[in-house]
Image (cartoon, rainbow, N blue to C red):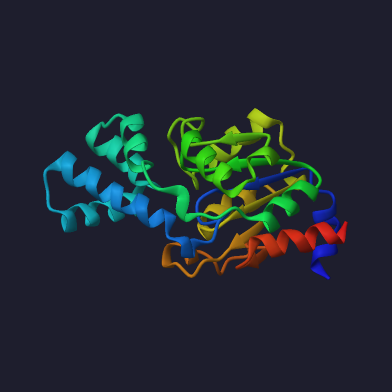
Length: 225
């Protein structure tokens, strides 16, 4: 059974993406962020919402995040953008006792690796009831606003936390963000949500495991030790 593999048994560090990975995408929490991004762009450029949406998605595809595109093209202050788009209602999330239990029993250190910021990450983690299980958050500010899947961001993470890639597992809902991790020797787990952007590059060999239920997958891992 793959859950008993020696590679997983020897894991020292577990890296978790945040949005649509630690919580179910069906909550549509990120949908609130999406609306806020569109509004920010419409106000910034004085354009209609449908035009702002096109720019938002264009920058996301070209730069990895809408924020990076806005910084490169329009020289915006990243903190102003992050504060605005993360002003959302996290109460749509429910505490997840299954995830809480699995993380508590999972041996090794756990780190959040996200293109969001620390403030948003903490609000989400606290709402889910899991913040106590994580040693650190490596966010978009720590990466100097360079987003996943740029390879230098993964190397910066490795350097900061003295991570050994071959003893590391990374969880992520966007398949393309797992490619640099696999190239470095990490084991990857794709949390598929059914979104088109999440499925991009999901057919490659850089996807080692896949699940649509992270709490259940982690619970199975725990029982395998």
